[in-house]
Length: 133
Image 1 (spheres, rainbow, N blue to C red):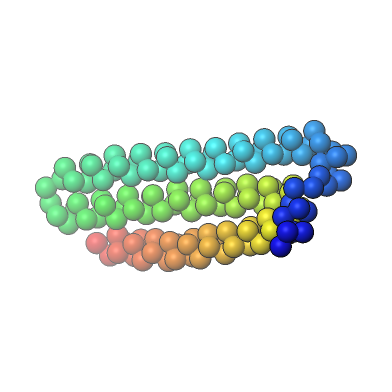
Image 2: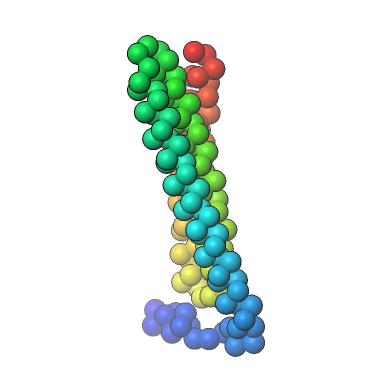
């Protein structure tokens, strides 16, 4: 285990020969992270506004329909944000070239893919409910 940790902190040929490129790619991955966060925050803000509008309506059927539409929109933002985070994680892992980072990336991608799958299924179910109403 210690050798794995030491290899994670050793400088690779990528870092020694292409330091400026690695630095630029790390910045690019950070920018992708910021866009993912911005996307999630925009989605959350739109969701809050949409839910508030739905709650103002007096008819319960229209309130529920509005809430479901807002949940679908929020889900789309979450899925897009997760996809951007995966891109960023892949770039970070490619730059580190460490085995532990590769395992960490694998776990992150699996968890995020499972989350995306079930969220997508829920969104499809909500779309069918909205269409039926």
